[in-house]
Amino acid sequence: MRGLCSLADSHARIASFLETELSRAEAVHQSIRTRYEEQFSELEATRSQMHQSHQLISTLSTHRDQIRGELARITSILHPLRRFPSDILQCIFETCTQASEMPLAVAITLSHVCQRWRTIALSTPRLWNRIIFSTDRNSNDIRAFWEWISPRVRNVETTVQLKDNVYKTSLGLHNCPLTLIPNLVTLDIILSEIYLIFEVIDVKFQVPPIKKLIIRNNSSDLDEITKLEQEVFIGWRLEKLLDRFESLEQLDIGDIPTMTQSPEHGRVFSQIKVLSLGYTGPLYILSILASFSQLEKVSFGHVETVVAAGQTPVVHQSLRILQINSFDDESWLPFLSCPSLTALVTASEDPHHFFNFIERHPTLKRIEMENCEGLLKKLTEIAPQIKHMGQSGSWTDFSNWANRGFHEPPLPSLEVATMMDDLNDLSAITFEAIVRSRALPSFHPQSLLHPSLAPLKEIHVLIKPESLDSVILDRWKATEYYHSAKKRFVKAEMWDDCEEIILSWV
Image (cartoon, rainbow, N blue to C red; front, top):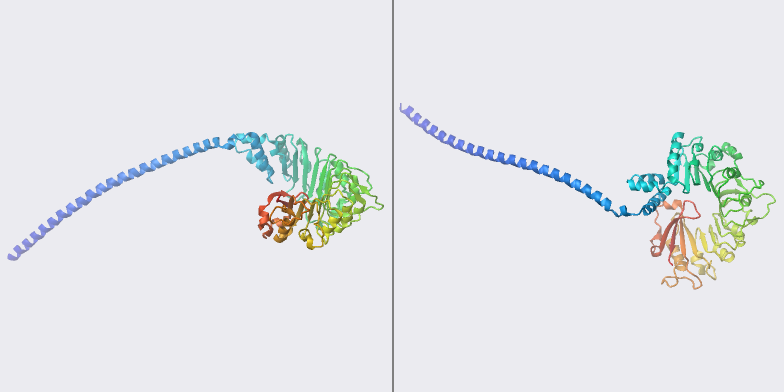
C-alpha cells in the first residue's frame, strides 16, 4: 500500500511537470505561429510591392523607348543633312558612285533611304550613267534591265561595260538594246573568249553612235591560244571594227591576238584621236599611223612590228603622245616624224634605239623610259628642253651628278621627275638625295640645289600593281622629307593599273 502511494505521488509530480512543459511548449508554438503569420503577411506585402515595381519598370521602359523614338525622329528632322540643298546632296551622291566599283548598287542604296533622297537620286542621272552589266541572263531580264535604266540616265553622257561571268560560246551582245541609252559615249566590252570579238562586229549587235570603244580580253593566257583559234582570226582586221563603229574618236583594244592591218588598203580614219592597241600580231605600225591621220595619242603594247618594203617617211602632224611598251624591231623609227610630239613613253629594254628619234624631235617635253648606262647624260645632250622625266632603276646620276662625270646638273629644265617604286626597291637614301639635290627650295636649310637650277615642281613615285600588295615597308615613306611634302594620290596617267604619289616641297 505504501509502495502504491509512493508511485502515485511520483506520477502526480511527473504529470504536473509535463503539464507545465506542455503549457510552455504551447505558448512557444503560439508565439512562433504568430511570428510566422506576421512574416507571411509581410512577405505577401513584399511580393505585391515587387510586382508593382516590375509593372512600373515596364511602363517606364516603354515610355522611355517612345520618347527615344520621338527624339530620334526630331533629331533626324533637325539634322544638318536635312537642310542640305539638293544640289549639295547630288554632289555627295555622285562622289559615292564614282568612287565605287559597283556604282549602280550604290545608287540603288541611296535611292532607298528616304523619300527625299529617292527623289534626288532619281533626278540625278549621273548616279546611273556608269553601267556595269553582266549578260549571263535570259533575254527578257536583259530587256527589262535596259528599259529600267534608260529613263534614269536621261540624256547625260553614259558609259556601259558589258561582260560575262561565265565562259560560253556567245556573249549575247545582240540581246542588249543599247539604242535605248540616249547618249551612250563609251562602250567597254570584256570578252570571256577571244573569238567573241566577232559578236562585236556583227550587225545584229545594235549600238548607237559612240565616241569611245574599249575591248578587253579576259580569256586564258595568250601563250596558250591554240593554232585553231589563231586560224579563226585570219579574217579579223582592224578596219572591219572601224567600219562597224564609224563615229569613234577613241579606240582601245587590249590583248586581242593575231589582229592584222594591211599596209596597202590606203584608207584613212581621220575621226580617231586616241588609239591604244595591246598584244597584236604582225603590225605595220607606220601604216597604222598614216591611216589615223588625226591621232593625238597612240599607245602600243606588245607588238610585232613590220616595215613594208619600200617604206617611205611618215610625217604625222597631230600626234602629241607616243607610247610603245615593247617591240621586236626598231627599224620603223627612222621613218617616223612627229612635229607636234610632246611626250614619249616606252618600256623598251634598250632605250638607245630612241636616241636618234628623240634628237629629231625638239618639241618633246616629257620622256619616260627604262634606265640604261649613260641615259641622263645622253638625254641632257640631245634633249635639254625636257621638263618631265621618268625612268626606272637608279637615279644616282641625277642626285650625285658631280661625282658621275657631269660638269653641270643633268636636265636643267626639268620640272617633274617620275621614279618607279618597283617592288619597293626605292631606297630612303636615294629618295632623300634626290629631294635634297633637286626638289627642296634653295632657302631650305637642307637644300643642296645648284644655284643655276629651279627646284622641281613635283616628284611622282609610280607604284606598280605588284608593289601595292607588298607587305615590305617603303622605307622612303618613313623619311622626314616624305612627311613634310604636300601629297596627292592619283591613278597613273600613262601606265595602266598603276598609282602615283605626287610630292611637292614648293
